[in-house]
Image 1 (cartoon, rainbow, N blue to C red):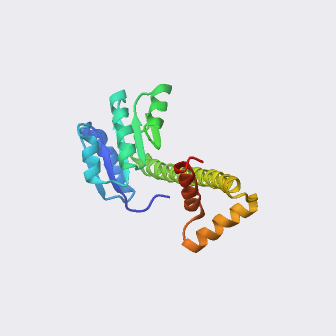
Image 2 (image 1 turned 30 degrees about the vertical axis):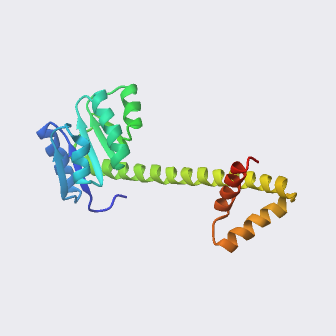
Image 3 (image 1 turned 90 degrees about the horizontal axis):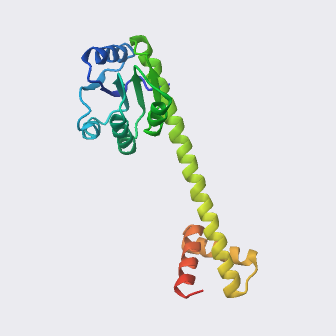
Length: 196
């Protein structure tokens, strides 16, 4: 569920359609709404506004606008809901690639705005959580690899068994109040400098 009060940027060149979105947002309790009537300098404007959610309404999305949205999503990293009148599979895929959280075809009605914004925020948060988990898993895997490599170097250079090499790195990490992965990186770096 979306927080009760969000700062929302509405991007729409059509004043009538923007008014429908604004009314739907106000009916949902959102009062901080900034309407952007042109996609020129969009990234700069969105950075200045710093919205919690971005709603973009386009009759026919162009590749240029989707490319701008891709740049926006990389820099601003906010939930994006996009309303369009017409679409095809390629446009939907391009919108998803551009970071759009909700893509609504031919569905611009005031009463639909709140559930769509809520869904966009929920999907965005779920994606962000998954991305963080993936980044953590990748980082842990890299740390395991470097520890295994350092263990191998210690086993070879000092004639230690696997458990002894691991215990040595662990004890060094505790003594120096550093992470074991940092000690392992130091071992690998030292070995590379010494040509081992």
